[in-house]
Amino acid sequence: MNFEVEMYRPATLECVIQAAVREHVPADVLLAIGQHEAGTEGTALKNKDGSYDLGRTGINTVHVREAAKTGVEAGQFVQALMFDGCYNYAFAAYLLRRRLQECRADYWTCVANYHSKTPRLNQIYQEKIRPLAEQWASFLRLHYRIEGYQF
Image 1 (cartoon, rainbow, N blue to C red):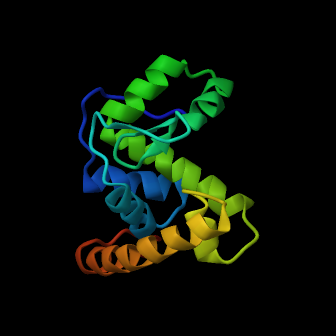
Image 2 (cartoon, rainbow, N blue to C red):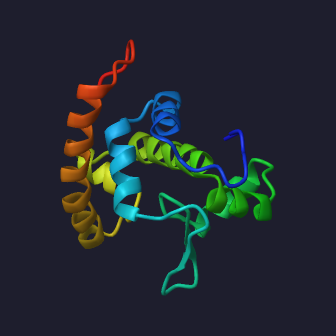
């Protein structure tokens, strides 16, 4: 979990695809997550439980403890997630990979574990992410060719 950080760097399609390739996750799903979460650089949305969803992909602050285990200082981590769009997507790709690896359910349930493992919330997230991922997959197939990577 050692990603390059540049404060106030907006997310680009290229850095999102690079994060997906690096973490071996589907770029269409990663882009769908970002589109659905609809954050922007600098976003910190407070949740009912007192946690915050940060940046483009809505990374929840519960992950600060996880980052701390790897030696990343909490304040720097939060700032990077909020203000570096590429770092935010890189961490989202890392989380998505972990959710896909640890899950023993069907694919879309595993994808929606990114958001919640609660069955009802997971199902709602699946219903929102799937069509977005399908749209992104069509776009990526039309506009991008990466050797050894299939959209």
